Amino acid sequence: MTNNPISRRNFLGLAAGAAGAAALAACGSDGPKAPGTGSTGGGGGGSASYWSLSGPPGEPVRKAAIERFNKANASTKIEELYFQNDAYKQKIKTSLGANQGPTMIWGWGGGGLKEYVNSNLVEDLTDWFGQNAAVKDKILASSFGAATVNGKIYAMPIETVQPIVLFYNKKVFERVGVQPPKSWGEIMALVPKFNAAKVAPFSLAGQSRWTNMMWLEFLLDRTAGSEVFDRVFAGEKDAWSDPAVLDMLTKIQDLVKANGFQKGFSSTTADSNADQALLYTGKAAMMLHGSWSYGIQTANGGNFVKEDGLGWMNFPAVEGGKGDPSNTVGNPGQYLSISSKATPEAKEIAKKFFSTTLVDDDEKSGWVKSGGVPVLKNSDSLFTGGDAQFLKDMAGIANGAKVFAQSWDQALSPTAAETLLDNIAKLFQLQVSPQQWVSAMNGVIGK
Image 1: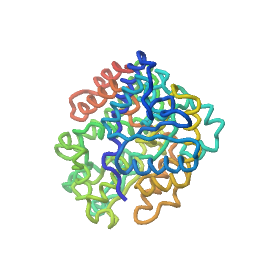
Image 2 (image 1 turned 90 degrees about the vertical axis):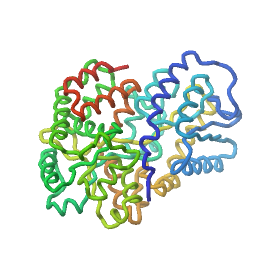
Image 3 (image 1 turned 60 degrees about the vertical axis):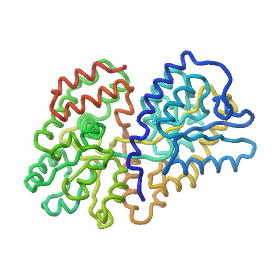
């Protein structure tokens, strides 16, 4: 099985699209809806509309779900449209602003969903999930975080989960004569040992910026728990000024100063998979990356994965830290919301789709066959073959997480996310101090 190597990044622009849609919605037209696409349900009598992204591995599974629903519900119909990533971002922005959007709004939750909620574009599904507890119980509880705004649920988690994990090269560890780290202190103790063996302790695609962000997300969680970033997400003034943030930022720069990453890491890009190659060729010992990395290692690493060269684990604890070691970060799912502008009939069709087809066994099987770990519980029996252990472990991390936090640049507004990524790059390049970083980020809270 392989995963799309840029699966996480394909959808980051959705938050930007949502922000634009929110601005347009304020002056949206009440004019006629486009046939098959309007949020009145598209095409009239007994229909609802669904838009999403085209291309493998997702489109075939999405199309199969709609085909099953339409076949089982002869008197109703879901009309589907698929777009390439950039085209979707533009289309969803303009259509929602003109009241011509789909019944079901596909997205990534977090900051984009929050913009929809603030502009009253999506339905509050809290009571519906309360009345359909059996449906909610089929979905990993940890996936609901990015679907929740101000304590209320505005989207249904769908498709797959993609936690970020610490990968390591077992052969390099064996050659150097060391064991995988169980704490931050052990990570720092391993750095000089790998450097002495002329192996980069960690591979990092620093030019891509979001890869650097993974380090901050885990270190802050392990040091202080999820509460600090929760306050940032909530827009609390000066929330980044928590002492745990300075501690986390100092640890990051300590790792950089100790030569924890390959030489020239700030020029390495993730899109080229150069960071992945450093790990499977043994030029780096470890790499913090999304679970989709497994598919890249399998596809590009020759016999590396097949010969049991790849190891993985959840991020280790920080000594004295308050964070729950079961917590993870990454992509807790993809999300479907229901347009608040849709007709009652279209909304009911969407809810029936939510409660039947999207939680059935075929849906679960389809995502596993595509190389993903479904957001649906009890998928383990479907994990077979050479990838079974990895898929089981990823499902275990996602299901066992007390908190499955969404990646920060997806959770924040587009403005705050860009400032975040810019200052993270400067942090790793030692161009800003921890205090300067905090000041910069406090300046865009709530923007």
